Length: 345
Image 1 (cartoon, rainbow, N blue to C red):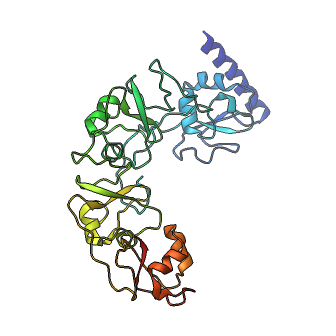
Image 2: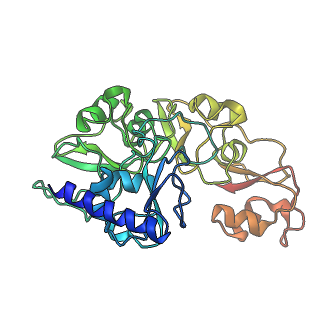
Image 3: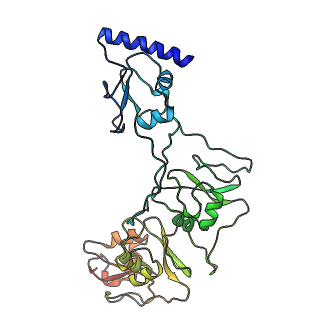
């Protein structure tokens, strides 16, 4: 009865609009400004010059608030509805969340697309369930109640990379997050929190007894005992030089960094720079005469670098640098490019 009454009212308004020569409230094209992110395939527009409320419009055209906000991303609820504006009220169905393929980059990995659901006007507060652990929002549906560790999924993440980074198995992730698509992980959502640990549970650890820092780049060998957290701008050459190993060894111990070309190394992730049973490499060559014999860390000097820039890079003093590399001279004028200098004992 309410719908019939509203439709009758709208019919009167439409007749009056035609008689007065004003713009119609619904049309196949917008009469006013509209959201630039509205789908190009929109087939019906509501031109809000009629004084009808947003809620009434939704009832008339038979759509939900979530459909309205999906087709008009600039609004989050009916509270954002304004006059003399065109809104899409009929268009393609919103897509469901799907996982996307990942690509190797020199910085953080990036994966799964955000679910096609609307966001609240303001972020919800964190909740504290009965287990006493504060749960960050938003969370992907299906999380167990006894979760005490959380991870916010980033675009590009996979269950493999997440499980590896937090030290658990994919099977555990699937059991703690029942709606991520099982161990195939076909339904994980970016920008949502998932559970990566539960009360009473313990993360997996390698059998070698050495604590592995997280996150780690996938592909690390299990007998690693030395680690390095990659910084933006690092290369395999600079890391290998600093750790006293070869680029070939880095590629062997970290199978997914892109080989010796190092095309797939991720910034802000730990890689392996030493394994159980390995011995440090001899001093790399060439070096300047007089370098201390007990040097453990080396730096390949590049053209334009000075003692000051190198010492700041490794957080050491210029005095120690000159002590370890006496050929550089007291004023560092004897430092040679394309030779290795000692930067740590």
